[in-house]
Image (cartoon, rainbow, N blue to C red; front, side, top):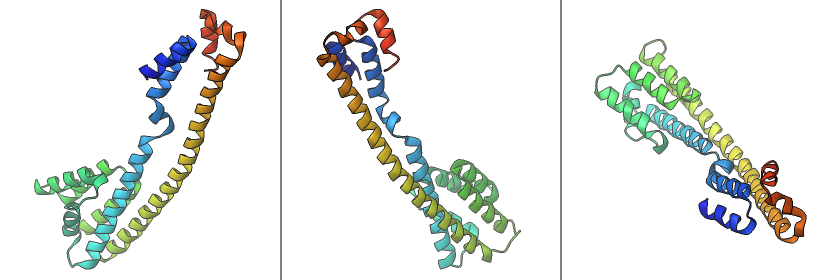
Length: 203
């Protein structure tokens, strides 16, 4: 950002353009790419994988819900490793399963995970039969996987718009450079202090 701003200052002598270019270089990644969207997509991918593993464990063995939860937590997806590790630690420290699951839901902070954990707590608490848990987890895993697919489509669309915005910024920069060097005295008023303040508006 400092280098880009210094080069702009040498070429134009416009302090305001230096500040704007430096700020844009500093914020380029945040300006055209939302890291929070990536984090959210990775989290739902992790939740989807966790639910699929839990579903497969419930279907492929005779273990109960609590044992299946602990087995699946030992091989956590990368995006939700920390919450599942905390769940495992809480269980080893003697936490009741319902309390450990409540803490897990708080850390995952996603509606699909909340629904799955609520269903598991009903089974563990004896409010509903364990036989229904597999079907519920299977449905929630499918819903989570569908959300992952939808978010991937959104990300591809967003990438197209981001590329267009970057091209517009480059075209705008080239236009300013062309005017600065080819427009003769047309832009001379911007060299004054008042001109620099006025220049801030279009920038």
